[in-house]
Image (tube, rainbow, N blue to C red; front, side, top):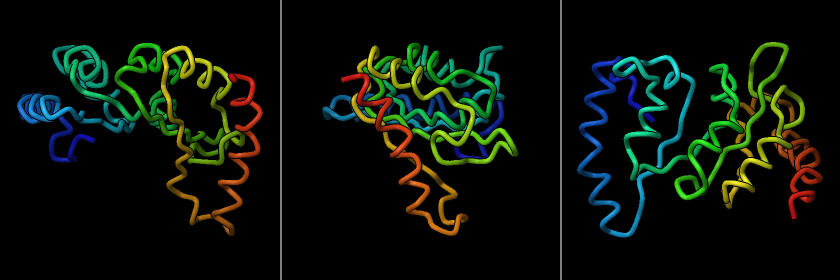
Length: 162
């Protein structure tokens, strides 16, 4: 993601200019550069537009690893952003839920995100990989139980899409 020192409108413009050539070279090599979002991309404005929208609309060779938690944390609908980015530019998505109680990261299904709508959007867009990511799992007594909770919740949703 955007380095902390560049999290200003001017810094974001510098970042956009700095990644243009490496992104081109990476594409020429048959690979792609992927960007993982957090919430700050929705707060930074570049010429009046949210940085995340600028990355999507103007960096057409850039791919995305969208983080559902951070999109929702910023106040936006992950399913709408999946549609906006599309599967051609998003091979992986991080499934992470947002607790209603304190806005912390929680196991999928324990929070506020609509993973049925998110999964449907992924299927329609052609996003091939959904990865459960729970940064704070070690904060719980059993980190593996957090993963198991997400699995038990998501499995029926994913099975409906097959």
